[in-house]
Image (cartoon, rainbow, N blue to C red; front, side, top):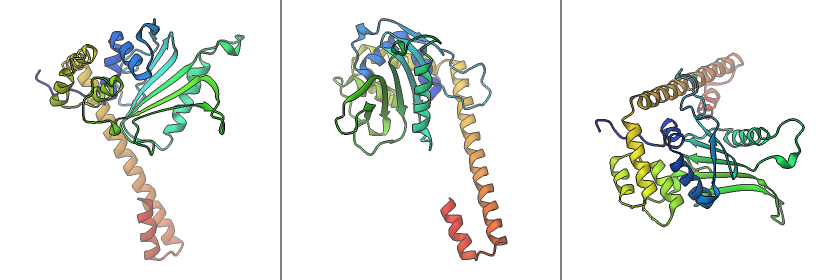
Length: 261
């Protein structure tokens, strides 16, 4: 191959794998949402571009928006925890939900809207790698509406052992794979759609344009992290200068510095 195989944990590769291969996307949705494959009769990807407009270093979201026979679906790969991640997921779910109705239409025409988040961090304090949230009555757990569904899949919680009978976990192991040994193990499962997905990831790894997109995304992340770190340092130093001017002791200032880090 000549290149290190890319990982679908990178959002560029993740999006390219699914938007360029509808057969793989349909199988992924069927297994991950436990929907019979034959029920997913149509898929329309409304933001199929891998990088919006151009590679300009901005950390825009590379999610996948779909209109399907099962409703509206948003899929996102998120490797790093953000303080407002829960609120952002709710915001984008709501935005997608209301986008499905035109002015003058009745509310019952709003489609079921499903959010799928594949996470590179532990979000919930439980051993299960899959959590689904809906709107339920607090005491009776009665379903208020079936039009909202938020799915979270936490990669750090998946098993290292391959189980061909657990297709949901196989997909997550595919996304989590980042070495040739990992991909070789997945090929040995003899699950055709997983083997085909491995081959597509290798094809993407040989694609010069995809590799450049990946390089740009990684550079943008490093630049963003550096900017945030420097901004944090500037904020701490400004705080310390203000404390000194106000007459705080060095012991108090040092305690504040440690608490701020």
